[in-house]
Image (cartoon, helix red, strand yellow):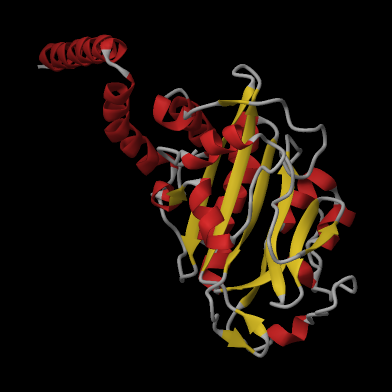
Length: 314
């Protein structure tokens, strides 16, 4: 009986090897669209494991690298010079048509709309770090550089969290305690429902600061809110309809840049394993926000980078 079981296991293992070899051979003969068609279902299975919140981080890291080897996640690298060393925002901070106040801080910068009042965008850079974060500051502070002078108590009993745009953790571990303290200026805050702030949005922030950094090294991020034409308000504070993020990574081997963009509705959302559902093109975010991303790149390079929607979440 034992021999039969081992023989069955051996045949099953051999069959699996033969099928894997046949699939690999078939994959190698396919064109790019054909390869992506095979990758899709395989990546769906991988995502169920790496995004379940219970898989050990080491296994998640290995699966991330498996996914990175696929065409669907690699995406297209657009030829471009490297970003300026130490720059907060790759290829220039977003341009706008409403005269935002630019606020420069140690670990992030903000495009602030005093008339709104609130941030339209925040930019920061992350890179390999120890993961050790200083203690979280206990309170937010009014940014005296702004004319709006939004106070932290304006959020009291509003039903919304004071949502960081440039995140506390990522800025702290990469840029230190003084930079972390500056993320608690009210110029870096927009209203967020608690489940989103502590759930899906936090997951995205952690994904960037940990998993993206481990895989790509240096990463540039711009995030911000989307406001409607007549936004809901509590007091004078407008409530966003959605939040967005644009992440850029310079590929040394390909000597170019690639980007992925996310658009997340402002809803009570704790978790979502299918982050790809929120992937959009950079062009789409420009339509929604009126901002011009990557302004230091040529118009042709911008068009190539911004018009392509990534096939999958990184």
